[in-house]
Image (cartoon, rainbow, N blue to C red):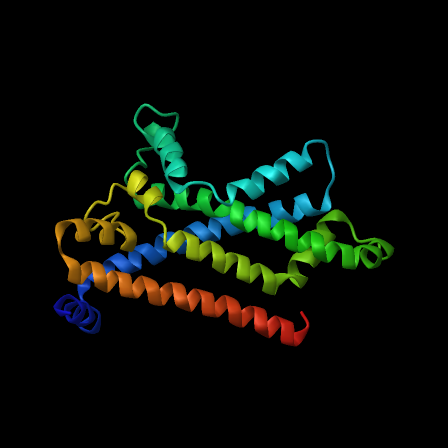
Length: 230
């Protein structure tokens, strides 16, 4: 009970350490989702509208990678960025940049796979109309992405929720360095093991509120788009 009161006090008092950790977590997650969005939206749309040998294999792999174990992603990025790895000379390991790279790889399959499914479903509805109008491949992708934007926002929010709640990946590539790469999830794990429950519980409360807001936003976007018939 005393720890809960202390946790709420940390939040209400605007504790500098707590909110610095929250800001870093949000910055890393938002940047990772933005990168995954830039790559994942056109990739998913392209897979939805094109047919080529091996496409089915790529689709199956993409869907499977939606449940990719975070520690595997973290280990892969660690091996790439470690001093003996192919990208070791860049000196990115144990930096926020490494955390962004790892989270982007974790979120990318989610956004690309959901985009493919959404655009493919819409393509069945728009196929005859766009073909009759002579719209080319680039125009089709742009049109279908725009018309499915509300569903895609839900996919982006799902990706952000996955990134914000991630702990294993960022722990491996970020190193959980105090004041530099320590995020909400890694701090909760560390402070709990140290017995510093007020800070861990405070961050846990912020994380729960954040996840609830993301889900509420996704539900609201979906409900609004259904009401508008978009």
